[in-house]
Each structure stands twice: as C-alpha cells, then as structure tokens.
Image (cartoon, rainbow, N blue to C red; front, top):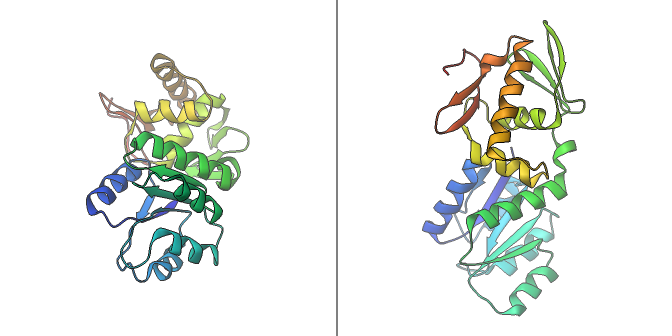
Length: 231
C-alpha cells in the first residue's frame, strides 16, 4: 500500500482528496504543524508527496527544496496560481508534475498512478509471492496454487484477482476495475469484465476458491479472506 503525504492547508480540499485516495487504497497523511513539514515528512516516509504552493509559514517551493535535500520521492504540486513561472519553478525544483486548481479528481488520480507506476514499477515493487485463503499467488507466473493443485490464469483474470486481493474483504467497484484495466492498457468493457470475473471464479473453483470471490449486486466485487460467497 502506497503512502501519500498531502501538504494542503485547505481543510475541505484536503478531506475531499483524502477521501478519493482512500477509495484507491492509498494511505493518506496530512500536516499537523506547517512549521515542521520536513520533520513530519521524515517520520512518515511517504511514497509520494502532493504539495500546495501557497501554504502557511513557508510556501510549497521551500518545502520541495527541503525534501529534495533528503529524498528523490515523487512530488506533485497543486496550485490555484496559473502563472507559467510557477510551473517552471516547480519543475526546476524537481517536481514530477503540476496540477492546477480547480482540477478533476480522476485526472489527479491518473497522474498519481502513472507516477507510482513509473517510479516504483508495479510489476516488481510487489513481492512475487502472496498468500490468500491458504493459496499461493505467484505474481510472476500468473498462477494460483494450494493443496488441490495449480491453475494458470489469463492476464486479465490474474489482473482482476490481484486487484481484488489487494483490497481483500473490501468492495472494489466495477468502475474501479475497468478503470484499472484501461490504465494498464488492458482494454476491457463492462460486459467483458463480467465474462472475465465469471471465468476467474470457474478457474478458482478447481482449487475450491471460487466462492471467495463475492459479487456485491450494484456495487462490485470482493475477495474474501475467509467465509463463503453470499451471491
């Protein structure tokens, strides 16, 4: 799970951004003392920083300079200022992107995901082996195995299983799954998603695991860690 440090003094905007990021299973941290941003950054050790330019005490450019003295962590600037020099300054200080307020949340999320994918490489950042319901999930070979045997999944089936397991025991909406597949360049429609989930369940049935992928009507899907399906 990636940790995001959100340096934003507008409480309403902070809450809105945090809520959206939590929906994507990011850990979100805010600033408690705007005179000690660098101390809080060091304590949190985030994977990405989102920082406003206009802040109390010192501006975002100051804190970007301070962070860059310690780390190459990716940084995204937020700003309501539209002067080109702000964007130029942010890039010169080592920021990875610049988002002007007001913005579409979907655009911000897409930028965050693109940067995290580029910097940390999803395919290698994650451990190659994970366990779920007593089964071993092999991220490198797209296989699932337990005492009942081993199955190899298609790329789409495995991608869906991976996303559900990352948020096990929580509902992942159909929209989130489709968006993740498109962003990973696995072009998939709503109907195709249904087909892939059904195929995934049938394959998992071979390992007595199909019932652990639960449909939440009108909401999405859930990978349960234990218990049986409530379809």
